[in-house]
Amino acid sequence: MREKSQKIRLSPTGLLVLKKRYLRRDVEGRCVESPEEMFRRVACNVASADALYGNNTHATERVFYNTMAALEFLPNSPTLMNAGRELQQLAACFVLPVEDSIEHIFEMVKYSAIIHQSGGGTGFSFSKLRPKNDIVSTSGGPASGPVSFIRIFNEATEVINQGGFRRGANMAVLHVAHPDILEFIDCKSRQGVLTNFNISVGVTDAFMKAVEKDKEYELINPRTEKVVKRLRAREVFDRLVDEAWKTGEPGVLFLDSINAANPTPKIGVIEATNPCGEQPLLPYESCVLGSVNLSRMLKGDKKPQVDWDRLREVIRHGVHFLDNIVDINKYPLPQVAEISKGNRKIGLGLMGFADMLIKMDIPYNSEEALETAGGLMKFFSQEANAASIELAKKRGVFPNFSGSVYDRTGGPRYRNVSRTTIAPTGTISIIAGCSSGIEPVFAFSFGRRILDEAFIPEVYDYFIEMAHREGFYSDKMMEEVSKEGSIQSIPYIPDVIKRVFVTAHDIPAEWHVRTQAAFQKYTDNAVSKTINFSSNTSKDEVEKTFMLAYKSGCKGITIYRDKSRISQALALECECEAAVD
Image (cartoon, rainbow, N blue to C red; front, side):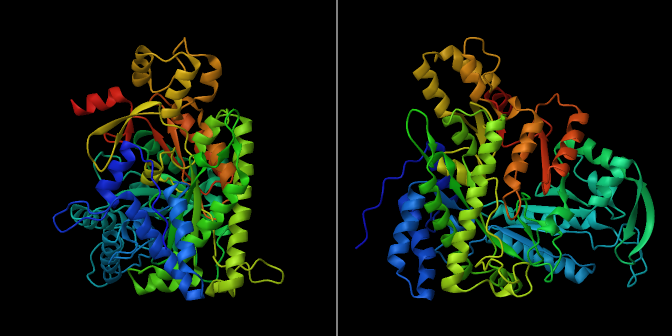
């Protein structure tokens, strides 16, 4: 007999997101599912995989439902949307190869459309495509180059988006040694271009060292594998920094760091990631993600501390949940099914880190926060690893174990080739009512754009509670907060409050990067983190940030300078009003 559904406490914005994007609808477009029914649908479907191993699916369903209903853990969006429904495509992240032939390129356009239609996002490396004006043997004419084909993928995505319930998203990567690298760096310099793509330059250790020593490096034609030109590395790096400062793109992927952590190097080289950069993947590989809500992993009222026992339980449930998805997922392509089932790659991560710090009275930009991040992720990784090893004892290691980096005497025998990833958790953190990923709070009063609609005003509830409790709340104060977003320049707010209640723009870039690096140290895959800059940030600061990320062991870096794009997902309320006007 099933227990009565728990009452799920959702914020108005969280409920709006569910209604617009996740809840089942009838043929006339009306919602015919409650949040409780959605979580029950997902729990029942994902728990059904236990039957493959002779386990009690009802007990597992109860655990999965309770963990999601309590908003302690949520899987990636495609799972919430599609589990237990006809589509049954539950993974968020895909990488497709792009080979140097018209037939293959347009085959990948088709494959990406199929994946987007199912709710997934795709990453591509265009580094194998011959450069612009290179010879095309079949016609004798000049090649149009990688950037021209990225535009084709972008337009195909736009068509799919018009009929989709989740925007298709892409990542385009080009190796820094490609002859068209400067054109690629500039390809989003004009606003409104390639809006369905994030772009990142894939750099190597050799390139970064050439930047530091102000030396030249070689550009290589991928068709002939011959050197066609030499450029000053510093010139290319400066161009990259300049564009990132202007528009927030390109980002940077540190390919050598990524491949040093590739657990199956005999299968292939990793050249691309999913759209937000946190999931490096082999060609045709997919990954399912899920995140633990740290804001609900605390105990104690006066001075909350991490509830390590509950965190351990939820991590183990999360690994079990994601591993089950590998078995019941309906993969969009047979090539994706083969390598995804062969590696069983999962990405368990976390959200609500900023909320946790604030409740624990720890400033985000402090050594104590870095120690907390490192200790937390080390524990997280250990428990995820232990859960995967335990599953392997019952279900077997991942099929591609032989020849992997773990295939050695005394090495760990994992069920999953990798276990941990830190995703941006955009919409699932809204549902969970917590801060996104490991990001600091954007502002204490701001506007949020959902599904390209008008901005919705939001306030940071815990700050309001604190202001009432400490006796400095007033309507005047909230007017000032709504204008500034930050509280640092409001004189009558106590310094002890300002110390902990810091926003993304209050925090120097160095602390953003050091936080990312602290989490990356104990994360199998990669960490999604946007280094937020104020609008008056200099290009020198952006350059220092890129170099610090490289030297700190990050696998990639993305920056965003406030107001550097016409459209952005979060903005201060006064800016929202200006945008509407």
